[in-house]
Length: 262
Image (cartoon, rainbow, N blue to C red; front, side, top):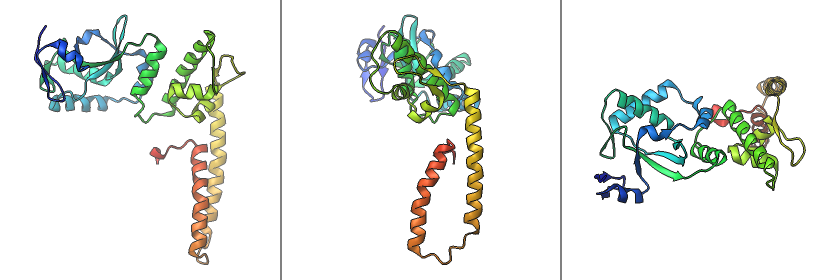
């Protein structure tokens, strides 16, 4: 069906066929499927976030098309889960929604079809890549690592070779640091399936280490608070500062403190 389509670059197309060449497609809302793996990220979404997005779309229109991959059951979302929820709400409330001047409806949602992902592993990689900009909690990282461990073990069960370190392979899949993987994963022997550590036991060990470090930090605080630096010259103070900064970084790493939390 021909229709006038105006894209972000302001070029106009007189048919859907030409619009497809621009990689912007218009699909029915009912054909867009939520990615089950997105539940890993949904703990970061709040009701307030959704309400702010709805207000933004209401006032400014939809700013970005959704990103999907094709599957046997329709099109699976890679990014845009909140946008899809917001659009569903606005359509249900009979509000006009525009994308780049085009009035949208349930039968014409702008999407970018990124790739045809044939396996859950490929979809997981794409979903992780689409959310790489997010600042994630430790709980979310642990869920990502757990899913990456499943994928890694499936790869091993197929007899595929495992070049490189197991820890680094899992870290790349989940897009987390190798240190995070080390914290949560029990590697066992090379070439054998790996598993998640006992999270309760692991958290208990972490809490014990934290308490010890906090005690040492309190002792250091008392020492430096009472220290008289009036007799130190600038060179001495600069040297102490240079030695203190790496120490602070080590403490932050051991306590698993992110700079963004400060």
